[in-house]
Image (cartoon, rainbow, N blue to C red; front, side, top):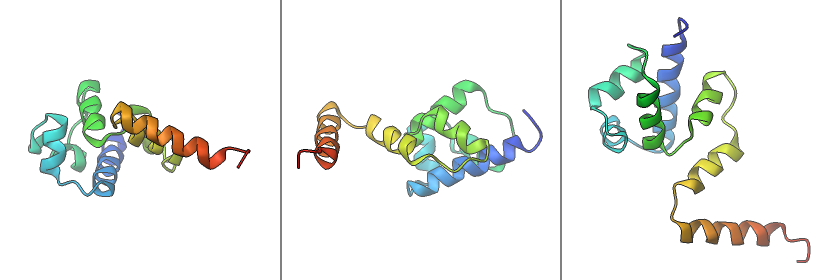
Length: 109
């Protein structure tokens, strides 16, 4: 990885974990990783594999795309974060969200 990138990655993971009020232990459990791995990632102590990043993203309920955008210094895209949030819900909840969004923007109202 590019020097400094592992540090930025760690900070972004910590940022997203904090936004979800998760402890390192909760994230580790959800990502099926050890707490030590999460701790080392957040410190930028090593370059993770794509598999590890994928597990972290699953644990945070974000897409790899969202994490990568954040690494490039871009502000988290609210539309992507919303899509990530909705994608982790049940089919029934997704249908409910869709109906609400459609109703909000229905021009006939």
